[in-house]
Length: 148
Image (cartoon, rainbow, N blue to C red; front, side):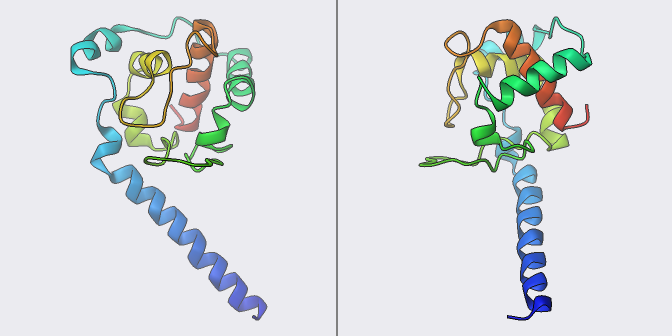
């Protein structure tokens, strides 16, 4: 295969992935709340008690890539295409999806870290893996993927 052909194939594959990412982001199921209806109003009132600072973002990043092992499913770039052996369901959330970022409150995301995400492979992380403070730091980092 010539160099041009290899580049063409790489380009087509990259466009497929990008196009797929856009399609996944447009999927109405992505914007469907994961907090049960009887808990969502309460969860939406919860706010991150910590301000975004370089130190908090760095801690959130370290937890995302380390102790929290979020990177395993959500990927280094937060696009939800991590190394997922035996994935049973849908792809993990794409944290760069601005529509998803705008649709979810910090409280909803915290609830998911605490309780898991029904209908997905996302498990509960608080308090088994993360403290509440660590979870809030991770959420600051997750918000940074969306530029919010």
